[in-house]
Length: 373
Image 1: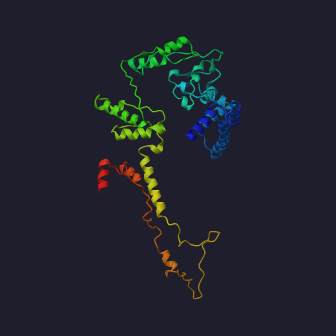
Image 2 (image 1 turned 30 degrees about the horizontal axis):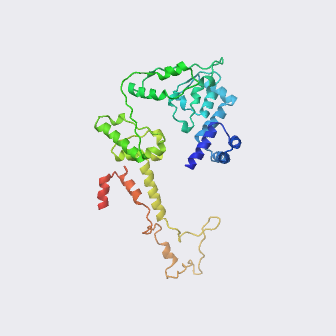
Image 3 (image 1 turned 120 degrees about the vertical axis):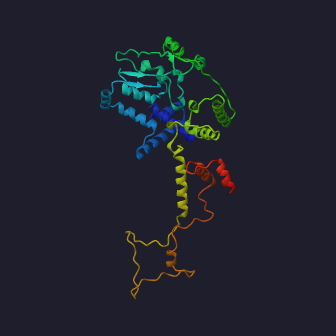
């Protein structure tokens, strides 16, 4: 949790265009010593990024803004594009707005789509003020505010679902846009009937996931809704999707995760392979002997040391060991020794994961039979 908070402070700082010095100065003015510490960490963090030659997302956008503001780059970009189109503008952050201003400011042809009532990514730095202030932030070439057009037809939601969302939007203030435009925007006309809204609250996350699986199964088995017409939307995919996937799979609900929301290492086709490779590597490390008495001695220059010749023309015999065996016998021992009996390289959980994966293809019944055997 602390790492997430630090990461959020750094990301928001770069989105606002603040460097380490500006962040430290701001923190001193408002009396936030924790932000001052974050400013010192930001300076070190940026140094490490430069040394490694990598960029995170916030820094990528920030440096793209700096690059697009260079006169020679701006001139080349202006000659390359006739128009710029932006979708979901209500979810842009200040850094993205600055990048758009560098790409399509100065009265160039720019068309932005968005719905301020659907701004849901504030926790990621999105600022709804971007779309509310768009007419003034991107004026026409003659200085007049950019015009605002309203799309009146709703093709996404049925009439009942649209009516429920309109009840919510009536309570949400929407300033800085013309009142008649706001009214027209919120009085959408549906093109289809139907839709339903259910609201549930749960005491624990586990209860929520179990009930979601139950709702989906009932919709499919009792109401005949195809699996392909159902979807579960989550807020933080990296944290929520693995738990949700396990629960739905255990409940017999087939699912497919959007590739953009799932890291490659968690893909069903990749995760078992990584687990198997990790198990094999662990086993190989356990088999590797700690020392090897049969290694050839070498000089500092890397050349092998030859044995001294004996007066009778042979070579010196191997020195006897205290137990009566010679070092020559040790050389003949196999180098790949079996691991000790107590050095277990495959734990039960990993074994079960591999057996139940597509690599082995075992189901719960197979595992029970194996356990009994």
